[in-house]
Length: 333
Image (cartoon, rainbow, N blue to C red):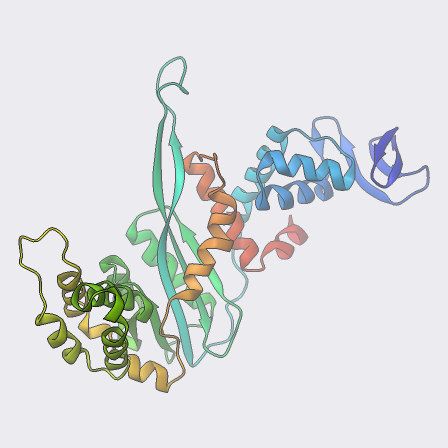
């Protein structure tokens, strides 16, 4: 007899029921877990630490399952769900919004020798996350990889195709000015769209320059004027305003030079006027918020360090859930 939050549960020939004739909760076999229970374990394990998942399973179902069992089952399904072919692509869209960015997660590399824990190395690895959606749609498609820039490029293209990229689709990319992101956008979508620098990222550089030029108390008026010029594609005037105040080359702190260089090197991606006219985003808030709920919520828990293969498996699981592949996976596995 098992005690659960639902009351007394009787184990009869490997089946866990509520009372003698109650509804089926899960079937248990020696050394195995039912599909229904595996789904619950994977559900909790994908959203919280394996320790917390065990606590929640006990709380909700009154079943004791070890942390290691939840970990093993969650990673097994994460591995399988990553190998499943995605659902049929969405219908082709006229305009697509897509973003790519990097986020760091904690990774551990085991050492060699008898006690691999003592020689382990802790480091941070960059996860490359992308999202894509039709301009008139709220639903996004995600992709995430710990792989190379080339892998990220391929993933970005696949993600966009699933979100409705077609031969006639105009692709609007927006993000920070990292060279690898801009290059990958041009590689995949340059012939049918344009990449826009994140307005708020540029503004951070201008804000620091404004304080250096006008001082903290009087910086806002100058800063707002430069923002207005950027929004009207007057980036040349912004550069001239900065150029007047460039610090000496040997000065330690150079916020004005940094802002000047940042804008000058990315001037081809400052068409804010066109984006606003077409009601397209000028900031990369979508991908930044996605980092939090797709990646960091699970893979950046305090005190957690991931083996790299397991981190990629969990990324597969997290993106599959975000892409609404969860139900389809369990209906076919």
